[in-house]
Length: 509
Image (cartoon, rainbow, N blue to C red; front, side, top):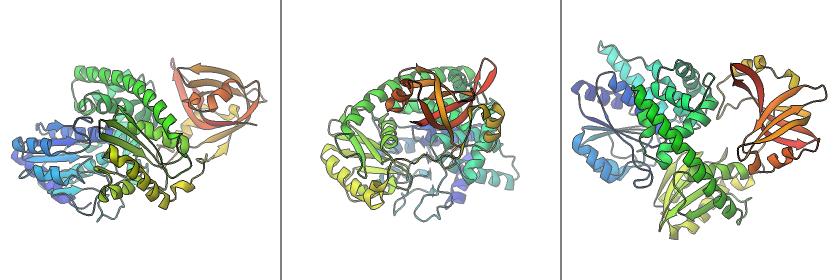
């Protein structure tokens, strides 16, 4: 990647001269893990860097003039991770302090006045490594820095032990599990299983993970808890948890993040209901689904946008207003580049600021900008064919009978993993089965047991089943025969393991 050698050389210079280094990170898992990578690497040389993560509500995403100027007064090097590629003004405000940007968000036509901008999604990059998250970019910088240390006769830190952080960020940021990312996650899961990082260990324990870590655990159990600090709590909690070496601090931080995650779910449920009702007042078959409301917490608008996207198979934007100022987040569908469309709106002056990547983006605007911006965004997405998408396809890999689903089969499938974005786990159809047991779990999940004609059985779980027609249909089955589709997993409880189906869809036979 361009500027990589320059960035690594400046980092090594700061290390040798024992300079004061500040790390300015985004408030999500990728930003927190990226910061923890640098903090951990520097700590092995007994060099303590300053961590700065902006408050989502008061400061918004990325570097701002005031924070960068203040950091520059006490530091000679600022490293921006998972942000900074579009921060021309704030980076200029840090002068004469040197700034390095380690990012993966889509770059503009010009780069900010930083010493180095290492980003596989710069306009002048080939894009071959464009699938990396920010933690992947940071890891590659440390590889280059270690190379420099070895060439000068010094012994570098063991980077393999840092891959648990890279794996966590890669999965939580929904980066494509291909090529280098696949290697990062596969090895990172092995490192995580050793339980050597006290922060992740404390979080796995509080999340009651009782099996070896998998990509699912990273994306659905650990990631949301780490994100909760940046969404509705103290922005630096996640990064501090990932970087700490104190088991007592780790336990306290993990407990706090778990509580915040519960609060986040309650806020999300409230905003989601309002956003869904509003979105339905507009055509849901257009190129864009959007909703905006007063007081909607900016920490959950991205999650709600993801839910709208999943429900409609359309790009979705959700915006929360505080007075005249709105902050929003968007999620896209495969084949539609939302980040470039948001960048185009910003260049046209229809947004105060905005940016992101193909599948996700953030934006800021005034109330007067709302209707024109959403209309123009719809036009740009329609040019990409967003209004031509039908219902989301459910691609099936094979059909199975319940009696054929064994723990051994699932373990064999898992050895072909890790599975995730760009590398989905196999999805199976179970044809002609009856519901032998159905019971609600929580507010909107459904526990089930399916049975076929030969009395073969499989336990199943349908998450968020009552958010749509799936839950009511299966709960009131009346002995009907269904074709069911889903993915397989191993359910471990009380030391015993058994196969389980995670239901994604069903239809009466």
